[in-house]
Image (cartoon, rainbow, N blue to C red; front, side, top):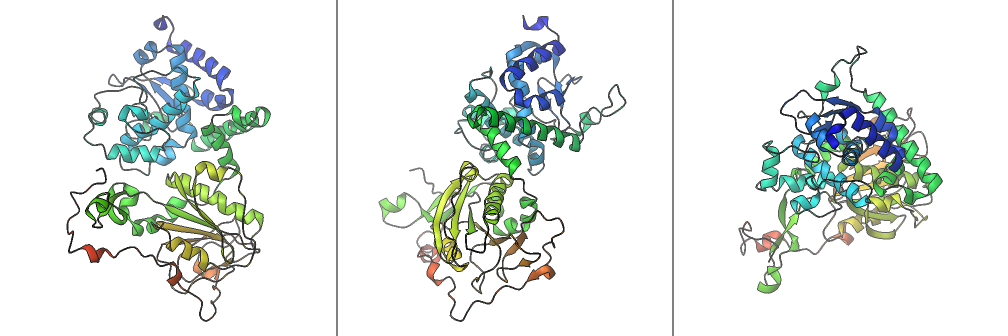
Length: 466
């Protein structure tokens, strides 16, 4: 019987099972410090950011060693996926903890290698689709305030692994990490220790993949290996905070709105154009300068930073476009996996920023934000683009060439001695020749909302379900 073993004995058996199944994560597994909780209200197990695994003895006793192994892998997955770096950016840490459990439990169950309990939470527990990110599930849960399951979790009526249990109630686990152990030191790992442990784990994954092939790792672990090869020095979310805030608060906070760019289905039956309901999620376009002045390394840096933007912003998809003096590859829908795969560059001619910007402006619907990765050597329209634009400048000399007088410039370089993004360090942009086109070629023919204001003044009762 499961209760014949003490928790330490069961943890030892569970670790042995993990070593046989996924040996490449053992650096992180062994770094975790299991600790029985003295809190009588605590009925589950949860990891802290210092890798202290608090657990309820009765809860561990009811798990088989196979289920305990699955629960430990679940907690390790939180650490490897950067849970504590992401939770500090949300306004409801408890709900975010629930959201973070959903993709992990789905991935572990889908692998077929772990014994999962039915009462643990999965996307299907809320009727959500599989394959979404933590941030997407978080927004879904926020929009399900009347869902009885969500209410039950938030009120603390049910406590079990996979139910928002990862991360202590304050969302950070500072209290337990600072407890003093038998050696007179805090029992929690320092941030530097944790980074080293994660690096060792990812290196073990890399060795596994190199010796047995990419398919030997689950896709979500192979993506971690790829990201380790493509680290970003740019804290995109912090650098773009004011851009995103000015762009649209609801885009980050979630929710929906009405837009004439997405007509309601009733438009076709009533022959009157009505705005349809759209989800407000950030939809970026990444434009890569593929002109002859850009080296392969510089172009790949643009791809790597595009990947980092998706990861740091919690975005699943965007658009990719390649431009030299003309659009060499039309905007193409891409996701996280596409950017991790093989990339073929098109173009390699002269440099002109106008065609790429006009291509973005002419899209239906338009992207919310443009990331234009370039060395800065080229012409841009004199007037600001109607879409907020971030110039990711990848210099090949010891200066930063500003592509245009407008837009936000972020310097992409691994050189610690390179000048920062202070305007005084920028070379002035090239002046476009006389008669250089603006955005006239890219203006859209979408209807003016004011034209329909007199016909439909209130859209609050419309939806796109009928």
